[in-house]
Length: 412
Ligand code: SF4
Figure 1 (cartoon, rainbow, N blue to C red):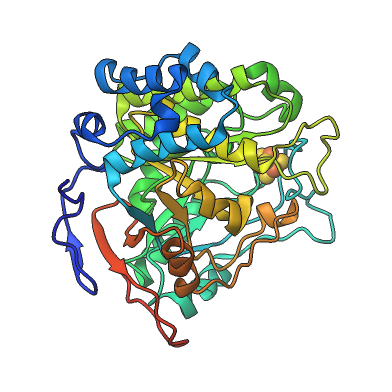
Figure 2: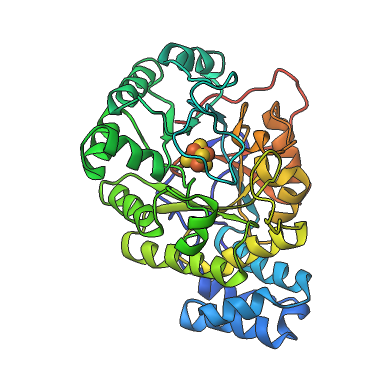
């Protein structure tokens, strides 16, 4: 098999127009791969594999059937096969810094342990100066700053325009991934302009891409119970559609393990798949389970490790048109993330540096990971660590290096 990033060797930077989704002929490659017996002897899984090869995708009914198969190792083997047909043994990561701009929020989603009212003693807002100050010590080590926050009651678009343009002025090489769909809706409303105008102005100020947060479950019956007042499913999709039309790439997410059914999760994946058919603007899908600490959702069913991995695997099988599936270690922890990398995921987030939203809800994933820790985590799955930039156009293979001063120069 020709390696997806042919020519990439240790210590060299590869700048490429390689397709975002890996091997374009991944379905043909899939057909020529050795099929694990656990898959070939399982009628449901082998039918799903045939559908991917010959019809291009699996149906909603097939996804539900695959999800329900008792042999989890066979499901993981199938998802891993599909991952390898696209990206061989490569696992992608980037060096990023998370900065949560404010925890003050006018909404009170029941699953959220992060938000505070403006008068709460732990409420905070990060000024533009403080934001730049946080980037400064890491500016030669990160390719991306990832910023989301609450729906601030007084900030308007001008605040974010200043934030992004000031960041770009000092650190033009750093990719700004920022604002969830509901933050964009809130900003548009507060600034009395359309979503399209909001996005366009922010893009001019320096916004490069949009993370996928806030999708939760794209079923309004569920949203009404877990995050009443947030954008509707249609609004979430419309905002991402608008971004894609402006050439702003976005990610998409799914928060599972609250009160939704498996059917609701598949509906969610179906809606994302439909939008991607139309716009092709999603880069990566990030499924993560609900963490319950300090939230107000006692009826949540929660998700076991088995279920987290099953959901990641089914995402890989269902989302044939969304290139990357991410193991979000901030939420699922390093051990499950490692298993996800052999169960369909091809990407892992990231060096991170600082994170508050998942940690407020109970995450104990270490925040001070050096790049070597992440690379070692990937190596331990017997795969190749490939550092990437935010838009998957520059790549570098990284090997573990025990030197504690080891640092990677920026890629962008
Ligand atoms: S999830 Fe976002 S919108 Fe909802 S309360 Fe938390 S910060 Fe606010």
